[in-house]
Each structure stands twice: as structure tokens, then as C-alpha cells.
Image 1 (cartoon, rainbow, N blue to C red):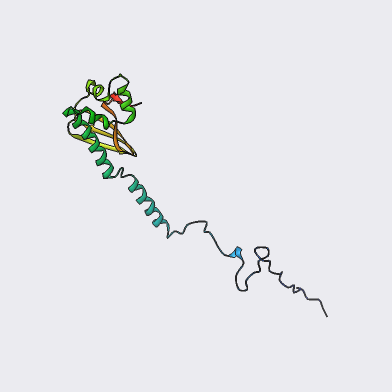
Image 2: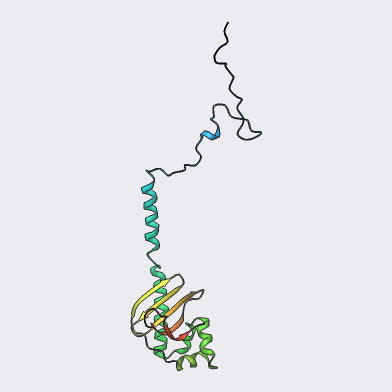
Length: 175
């Protein structure tokens, strides 16, 4: 009899995927189960692009109306306090660094604030809130505010924009 051309060799024994854990009958080996897709499905691409566009659009909306209103109220109250001569109240609306700058003149805050040549604000032209900082443009003045635990406080007042792209110059400013 002639030798067969192909020898029948039994298949190699199945090696468990993890040492000490026997394979389960009927379950394909782990290497055949796709755990992570390497490329996203084309059907999911529009959904992912739509979600990304929504996130970008919502984050570009800027500050919430409540934060803009809070900064506007604080700035207007500061200006009204100055206009009515309530300098003690206006001092309470100053940020700590701004109050310290005023008190460097060896006067109480209210007396030092009364001696400053601050312009009177008038109506609100615009408010820009970025994080915990705000820029309040009034008809006669520009205020910078910061949000503290106590609320919105004025960090700089009597500000005018510099020429070109130079920073604002302010009569009253913190450190």
C-alpha cells in the first residue's frame, strides 16, 4: 500500500486565552471578538459631527444672562452710589486690591474715593463677561469687575481705552 499524500494531523490543542482559565466550549477565542473598532462607522460620523457642532455652538454663546445681569447690577449700583455721594457704599463694592490702593493715601476709603476724579457713568452701553471677569461699558465710564464669593466687585473704574491696541488706562485700579 502506498503512503497517503497528506497525513492527517490532529488540530493543536486549544490554549486558554488566560493562564489557568479553561476555554468555554462553543465560544470563539478572544482574538476573533472585536473589542474595539478601530475606525468609526460611516453611519455614526454625521451623529458625531452634529454633537461636536452643538458643543461648539453652545460654548460660543458666552456667559449666561444671569452672570451678565449680576455684573451690570453691581456696576450700576457702584455708579449710582458715586452719583449720590454714598462713598462708603461705593467702597463696599470695590474689590480688595482696589480698596487697598485707595487707602494707600492714608485716608479712609470713602474720603479717598471722594477725592478721585471719576467720571459719571450714565446708561449701560454693553457688558462682556468672560469667566469671572466682566467689562461694563457705560456712556461716560468703563468699569472692570470680577466675581468674588461675595458677588461682583469693581476692580477698576474711570477707564478709557488706549490708542490702538494698548490697554485701558484707569483712574482707579487694583494691583
